Length: 237
Length: 323
Ligand code: HEM
Ligand code: SF4
Figure: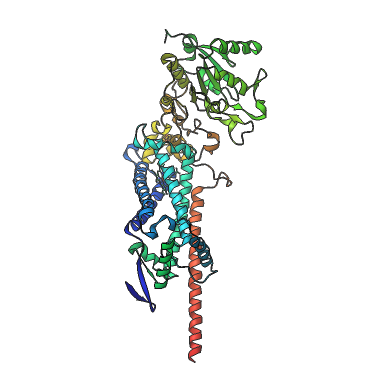
């Protein structure tokens, strides 16, 4: 399929499959819910007066946090599985720069972002720098899940399912440390989210690419040249 | 219990404050008097024994030889490994040497208090004496029980001893070798202020309305949600009360490295390394997040400016070409 844009015949390439887009948006929503409820859990800021039995504010926040945590964990796991069964753009080697071409691509991308190069390097899926950043982000997801399950295991009843995660508590350096790491991790992820939102906006508007639309529709609109070149390289990797 | 033979107990103190001894002397269920008269023969305990000096040393030597493999050893305080063990010596021998000898011949060893169980205060950073827990100083003990807390609850120790004497075996232990009957649950899960916690009612300041109403001490830095102990159930001083019950947050004294990890005691989270006690994680986090957003807004502005500049130049040169 091709469409007319700026006098060049652009090609529409199907990049992000449904599971990729779905897990992306589930992670966005659950992360926001987890952050809001988590901020309350860390520093309960809503005044509550009257009989204790009439209220359940912390209890409600923690219940919502837990449900969102399950959505989050399953979405992350699902996305990781898809790194091994999905299309080439969803694969794990789009994240880890294991090929020489993607290593060089990291430098080219940095050069473009720091105004050293005028042209953005062309990649169909993630650009290699973004891939590395997302690797770190998935690492943070794992840290949040590990510390979160350690905290959940702490007050699970002796034989309850969650008590199976008690082995995580010493790995986190104890519960208080787990709390601290969990809290720092949230801010690192929110910092990333701010960066991610803006760069998507930037790339979508300034570079006039279809990147911003692609996470909704799944399609990127690329020049035939880029589409061919990039696709060929992915096949080579 | 009455029919069982009276086993021997020896109690050693190393880098300690005798707080666990004090706590044990206040055991009420059974009382120490009952334990000493009916249950046990306490052959060595520096703080409460009548003998002193060489006489005292001799009673220890005799007890561990006579009842080799049968006696209970209770260790209070951590064991320094620095300077060849010179930081703590008794009768010219290092704590390390004595502990190894006594624990090796014991039927069961109880590390009483956080110092003996996990290193405690003497082992807190920077640990100048190389203080160690019993499990580190005498590795490989299979019959070791850790009873941390600062001090450990005398009633828990009395219960442990009675259990051991009655059934001839140790109670069930967790992965840190703590008896589950006393350390199987978080303080938070048995706390009388828990309904206020779940409701969202917290003490915000010492002596405020909430504090006087007995609201939860979570925002005053309570470590009950991260500490395993049975304080709310068993109480202190004969079950009279316990810290949270009288309005003071739990400081997590029964947890490993509590002096390093649970501080500041009156704050929810530990300090951020290098930023001092008053830096707030949430403020820094918010600052960074807003900072990132602002940096990107600027970046976008640079691009837009560059493009409109380029656009203007292009229009200018087009006009030149036309004329
Ligand atoms: C990236 C997503 C997540 C964010 C942003 C987040 C955020 C937070 C924050 C800020 C706290 C308060 C920490 C404190 O200061 O004490 C918290 C607590 C907690 N979170 Fe998460 N969390 C996330 C994922 C998870 C996951 C996957 C689980 C797993 C079950 C989880 C379970 C918990 C638990 C059990 C607590 C402790 C509640 C308590 O104090 O009793 N969280 N979370
Ligand atoms: S006072 Fe401490 S232990 Fe009790 S409910 Fe509040 S946070 Fe939990």
